[in-house]
Image 1 (cartoon, helix red, strand yellow):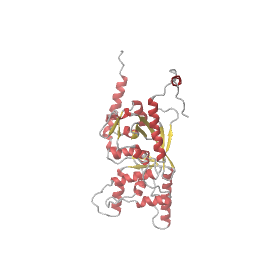
Image 2: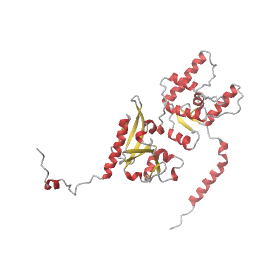
Image 3: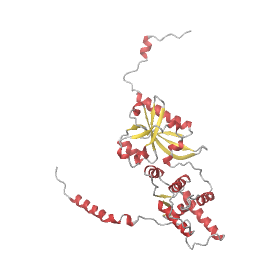
Image 4: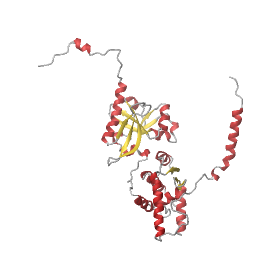
Length: 352
């Protein structure tokens, strides 16, 4: 038996009370955008945590999960913008996204990478940009917009790529400390005129009572020149190896040896086409590595493989500082600036 057709009076009863609050189309679009992130996280076995309260520029956070289903503790913040209006301003590479000034500052200062994801509710596709990284780049103040690349198709992006500026590396983690020491010794530049190992860069960069590590091109150059001299190898000059030095930075991060700001390093490496230069505190694991190097050195001395250093150790702090010749000529100008500022501050303010 067919159900009776509702009468006009019943249809009228389904109309809303005009005094009730409205659920806007914008709300529906926003939820569809958030649902796309939830779906991405579920499909890639990642953790998505939506911000339940006080959302002031971050809708939630993704946490990276390793392929063996281990949670990493590495996070990225996510802000979702959904709807066709965000795809109106096209570029050759993607789309222009114009954030508010307050959000630009908020994302730049955010303690973890802040991803902006544009969701096309009609095509049901999403695209992303690392907003924090873009805003920290040297050219960030030259444009009022962030470019969201068309190639950054979220559904086709492996999770590791989203977490690149969070410090995750596509490199196997070396669990045993003895194996880690061996890796330091055996990873050597293939360039014969740059005979440097990861051990040279790690031990040569230790500073601050071995609580920090200094990294710069000079560490590699000094190690190469000293090794060539000690081995009496008459190489012509030093063939510097940028890729090898960069691989060492990635090794520090991948093995959790130092608290390196990988996002800032990537700006130097990708945007400025130069090696990064930093001082980073060692992690507890990095300090354990120092102890392991000292213990192995003690074994070598005991077994007669190395002479006693008389207080000099392989893993021992060195001192670093600003090169005076690079700035001493500016010292008078710095003083002049201070004096000019005092004179300016001393001038009486004209009554307006």
